[in-house]
Picture 1 (cartoon, one colour):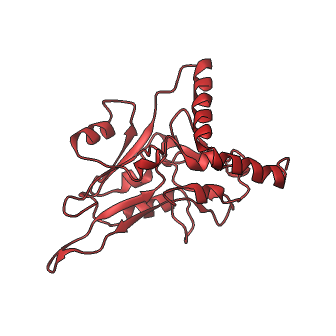
Picture 2 (cartoon, rainbow, N blue to C red):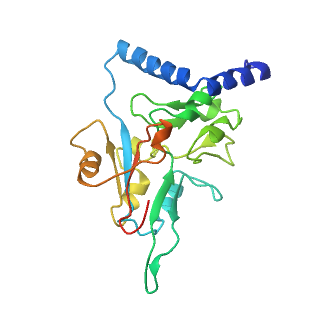
Picture 3 (cartoon, rainbow, N blue to C red):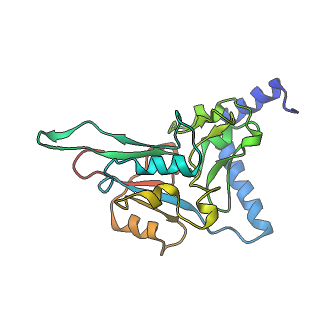
Length: 228
């Protein structure tokens, strides 16, 4: 491996310290990519409707099966709130916890080997498994704490919108296909006529930790019977 321990630590430390510079570099890289060919117009995103979600976890099981995710780790979780209301009128809020596919992904900026990257053609944040050295910088940098080490291939892993499985076959992500209440909407955020943009326009939405400047592409319809 050409990356020495000294260069490895110094390089990663510099990126962490100069996050703003990293952001500028990422934008410059995108502009360079577009200069040679037509700029990509797809930006995938997802919406999770907390009012439609019933917490059945069909999405997590479908994700595990389609993407061969081992037991003990998960690409997405459905978190259940504390009881809202009093018995017998008790309800729960269910919210999705998974990769946000940020426009400004901290995990990409801190990766010293280029294993973590954002696909400029789709906006999907993904991992080159063969480049991952297991340093754990991306896991630590992710504000949403949704990355994990795959116990079999020993690389960082997370949701990639079923890019290598369902999406590659022209289908919707496994979680979307399996949801019995249509609580998940997936599509191109750059297409004003897409289902996801129509859903975002039709309902109030929020995104997690937007003050950090990550520009997450996972939108959520807030549960209307409790506080977000």
